[in-house]
Length: 565
Ligand code: ATP
Ligand code: MG
Image 1 (tube, rainbow, N blue to C red):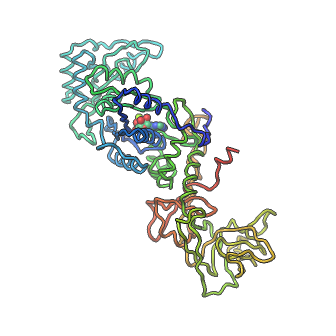
Image 2: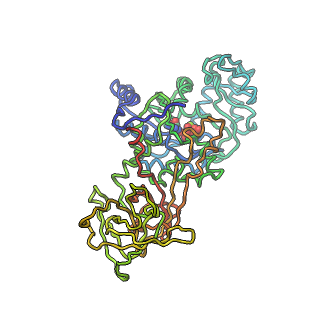
Image 3: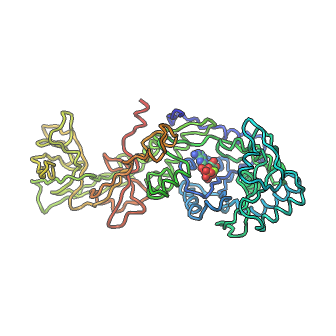
């Protein structure tokens, strides 16, 4: 397990190797002074935090150098892809704050061109139709230490290959009966160069091209040609494609493509306590371990959005972690740091009592109430004021009262005093309990001389949040914790499957929480700080006008600062 990277944000060099390559290329005039990147997701799942890094990098570099960035769906696997994923990906890229150049592209837009290029390869004697089955092909491929062997079909003539490939296209063969392979070198030390398959038969409909094709091009063959057709200059991808680069270059070198983009690899983002394999995320969804791709516990962009993470915080995070070629694991605390940093500055403040305990102010007139105006943000006057109602019956949090407190307890005790945030100082006169001895109501008094003033002759240190009993909203609050309680859930350490590391307390639902009235206007796009509790955002899906649901975005505690000490 690689050690988690914890770098202070201010120490991250703004420069990284890909930016340097681009600057050099611009200086030398390599791509006629152009910068053209692309983000090429396969629409077989929702985007996650790792994709956010790639999006910020590709779109960010294009912005920085006045270039272009395309959004291209790498859609060569029709069985696993669908329109829902396409829609979600477009939405997520936009939400992150980026717009692509021109129309959305699809590798499938180029199916005809890709087919014609394959015919061209056959004509040049550089591709052949092979009838080995999958198992035989594996056998013939050899291993890392042992060269492969030529297929018995490798040397069939151009005309025969052209005819067979045409028949493949026309549906004369069944799935798996034959494939088209590039003729490169079965003894290459790079296994990717041992006559890779470039076309296979799949008799399935495609979400873009319907039933037009019965053969589909393979990813490695498609990707480089798509890049070239779009005249991409810098084709940025993750490190696992380094060994595929010779194939990327080989294909482009054989064909009359308009340009030859440069593939550049960087190391993918890995986050501790998090799984970012699409296959595993899909499993979490399909097996119901979470409530959909946009479950706020998911590291998907849709999940993070629903949880109250902001696009600016995610972009900031991607900037902080930098871009390198060395594999590493980033501490999820760094992501949380970026979220908190953003929300501390921008989230309006509000009060919400999560576990209510009734307080009756015995000396407060029964039929009376008064308005209190508090600032929505301690440091940003522009966010305005919020209205609270103070009255005889209120709620405080159960944890803010203790009958037998430790000596350093600064909140409410029997006979003790505390200030209600923005309101008066109250004193607990007696406690009413249920049959099990659990406090159910506090009978208190308030000091009318203490609104906005300190009391004369005594110090009251504690300040707690509260909500009025009759002028508040009853809301549901969902407390989210990490989805996994293991630093590297899918490492297979301890011989355990990643599902075994799911945190049973990743979601705690609190009903009957009491929130200040202004939250009726909360939007799902902006989190609030519930004072003393954390940041919370209106749930976009499950809230209705008479039943608001709030998701905890992140706790207040700054674990990042703790690590730095
Ligand atoms: P798969 O190909 O297994 O479905 P993938 O995560 O590679 O999954 P793609 O849709 O192919 O998904 O990814 C689109 C782009 O996002 C690729 O360029 C890929 O390199 C990049 N990407 C994916 N995961 C990460 C990650 N964890 N960190 C950085 N970039 C990533
Ligand atoms: Mg991929």
